[in-house]
Image (cartoon, rainbow, N blue to C red; front, side, top):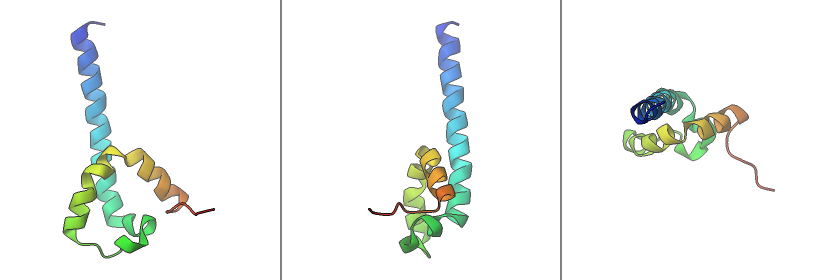
Length: 75
């Protein structure tokens, strides 16, 4: 595999990761935010816009948190 093919593969993987993250973020903002953070229930558009890039970047972590059921419990 040449340099161009390696770069193309990496960029395609990054694009796929970002696309999945964007789709997840939209669904999460609509249905999952209040389950993860009860204080964010009823949060406005600006707050949701601010956390959007972080949701796109960290979508695997937030997906696990959403599936598990929200905030971690202290010991």
